[in-house]
Every structure is written in C-alpha cells, then in structure tokens.
Image (tube, rainbow, N blue to C red; front, side, top):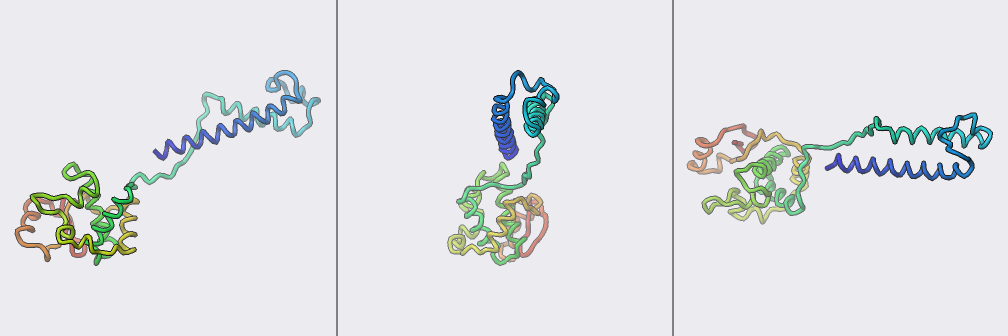
Length: 212
C-alpha cells in the first residue's frame, strides 16, 4: 500500500514538473518560430537571449528523459513491513488486557503478552480480531482470567503499558510464536497439566511461562 502511495506521489510530482515545463515552453514558443526542439543552438542564438537558450535546452533534456521508454523512476520508501495496524477499539482492548495480565511486569513482559494476543489473531485456531481473542470463551470459560474475574474492567492502563503495546504494533516480537502464557504459581494443577501435556514449552519470562 505504501509503495503504491509513493508511486502516486512520484507521478504527481512528475506531472507537476511536466506542466511547469510545458508552461515555460509555451512562453518561449511565443518568441520562436518553427520547431525549436529541432533547432541547433546557433539557429536560435540570434532569436532569443542567452538565458532563454539555456532554459530551452535544459527543458528539452528534461522532456526527452521523461518521454524516453528506457527511463525508470527510482524512489526509496521507508516501510515497516512488520508494523500492525489496528483500529482504536482494538488498541484499547489490547492495552487493557496487557495491563490486567502483566501490569506488574517490565516492558518486555508486557510486550510478550501483547504478542501472544496478536499471535492468536494471526492463527487459524483463534478468532481473527483482538476483541474476539480477548473475549473468547471455550467450554464456557474465558481464555483470559482477568476477563473472567472482572479485573480487565477495573484496571487503569498505564503509560508504560501503552508504550509497550506501541512497540509491539511497530513490529517488536520476541514471543517465538507463543500462543499461550500462564503463571504456574497462580494456576491449579489440572490447568497446568493441560499446558504440560498438550502444549510445547518455549520459555519463561518474569512470572509467565510461554507455550506454543
């Protein structure tokens, strides 16, 4: 999308330049007779002043370059291909669940929770929106305990959490594709048994263990 926008911008600038060239050409043509672009410098030297002659040849070179079939327009566009674009509601939901789940963690710990939510959005095994993932229920049980116990609704999202989420949306991801995280000390044994037997352990960070 960004590359297309850049191309459109380049073309717009090119068209604007050509219009300026054409306007100058029209002004000069009023001073000249015949096809000036087929004339030599000596032929037009007696007809117009020196500064106009130089502009004529400069504009002719520009026009020839623009019309050449071999001409390519080069442009460099700085695009962050890893960036994730969410609507305002989705960003707010993501910030709130990160605050509820990892508000006591450092920046990386918060970012990892945001990564897991977004990994689920990308996975065919989960809903394809942030809202769908955060409020998903399986067997009548919410996937995220803060939604189930109401903490999600009570937290006040901090600047640290918003900054962490912003970095994730810009493409930061050290989650190794994790789809689950759990605090073993706060989970009951049967719940942890499901993770240990049916998921692949990836790493531990802060108070959370991450699984795929």
